[in-house]
Length: 459
Image 1: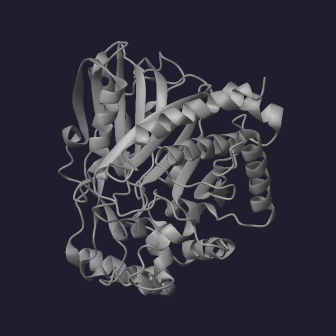
Image 2: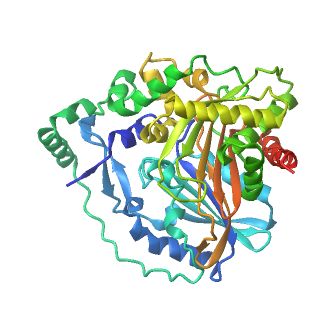
Image 3: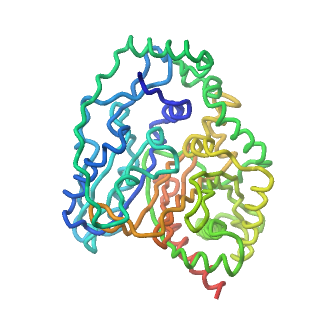
């Protein structure tokens, strides 16, 4: 029996464009393991048996008579997906980010399993990096950043499993895929309305396919009384990216929360708002007291001590970039986030997972065929915050030091900001269009300055 992609997973594939690849990236920086990159490569290969999907590719059903299916890749080549790279010693953080920027700009090859990992040596301080690219059709949304989820251990002495023998199953032929699709229709006639069809660009058909997701988006759109403000963050974007990073001490953020109220997430949004304010001013943008930037903010419902589930909700939040006082910004955002939750402006988890790099086309599907700029009318940027474990993790015996997410860009949106907390630190990953937001490094520096400024208000 074939494993068919669900409606949401298939939509990820249908709505992806060459200029806006949807893969989620991750950058792990760790101490060089005792066995070096060879040990890391052996660990990846051994752990592949824990993620069988990483040896499977997507196969289309002839005539688009059903959703695509997952099939074993009989020509799977680990050396294609797991590659080595090196920086000129001593490799700097900027050199690593230049490499990450180039890697994130290239779409994944649809003819192969939808992931890649790069083992990078030569970082200063006797460190190495693992850079990953994973398509959201392969990984279940924000619940896992990438393959690193199965690579990391809580102990440096965790034994690596022996590689399991893998024998690919014969991929079904075209007629077999068609017959399986008809069998699905026979067992579940309602699945006919989810037909992928050849008219992938027919937004009305797409709206039917993602009906559950679209419902959440419609509710969000209705809750956005006014269009998103005009912003230099929204412009036609190219295929090249520029990645920057920043860090903040989690205890500092908690100290701010304790002094001024709200949640750690409210404090993080205040930091982002303050950094965007200074960045806009540096570009000569006019700001008044009521100026705002609208962010789509997925929020984990996991509590700040790491307990609870892995569910997420999402909010449209107007960041008060026109407010010069950081304490007032925090108070306004705390009130806004509380009000959003109380008034039901949240979107369900499935809708949230679909939004990153995906929402514009879905929302246009509910309206008109050609209005690809609708995303700019709803929100200016995406800001994700995914809490991680607050204890050290290891890969092949090397301690993980830094974990940066790289969130994909939607069409017409020049910046996304991902945040991940790990082992007492919040790591910011900024993914930007290389041309329209060419100075993203300035914004990363401003984030760290904003954290320092908020900490000063709490002493």
